[in-house]
Image 1 (cartoon, rainbow, N blue to C red):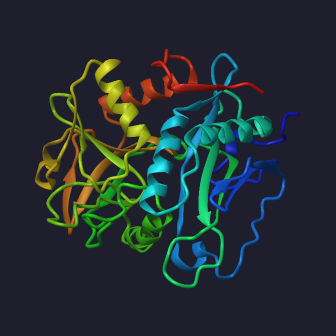
Image 2: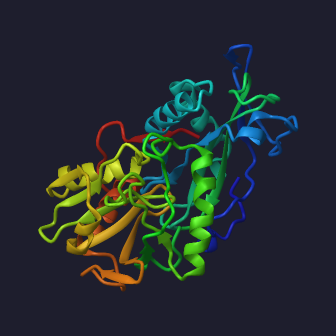
Length: 341
């Protein structure tokens, strides 16, 4: 049944949908999982997640394509990344095939919340897991809950993606041998003070440098970074403390195989930033968000692409990837998961 939602004016926020998926890990094994209408969670006051932040999450979307199908974009990579995160946090690993199955089931039960093609809106999908049993000493939980909920969301940037301003903060995002490469909730908690501080100073986001030497570009609090050189090479920073973004990985493939551009994942020194022609942030929520300016302790670096619109190459990357997602451009094999109602 069609939902009475003003799709054109949706923001990027939580809206309760009808069903969510829940599975529990107890006595060394996962149960079959179930779909429930109850959006509330009841856990013990000493649950490991509340005491020691043992929690992780993923984010992906379901869309309606030009031919009317409901699809997800590369959910197998989200499943693998969550499994990698769980191993790093000593959490029970939710099987990758069951992860994809849970996403499919949850979208199927909320299919009427998938916005119409062309609305700019999507159904955001949030799989997550947490340690659920009471743990007093500092150690991993014995029991876990894996859940998937959905929420229809509008475009991340209302009225188009205007270039944003980043600052180089005095804060670090991740330790050299820490958890920067996994999608742990604690990484985001650590970044909150820095992002609030950036907003107070009039910046949109932080450009974090590597914490060991503070000479190399890493990422922002919630997105990876890509650069475009003056000769149209697409470059993304390489580091073992960067979260491996599925959007970034897809964009680099698109650059090389669809647009015929050179694509490099390599260390990017901060002193190189002034020489790039374009810069953008990439992630599930916005796909690509253009950066017009980076401010390093009062010193401004302005990209030639400017503060008015996306750079030329960034725009081609954005149009091609969103075209693949929405079904107007043929996708590489295995990228699109069609969800039958």
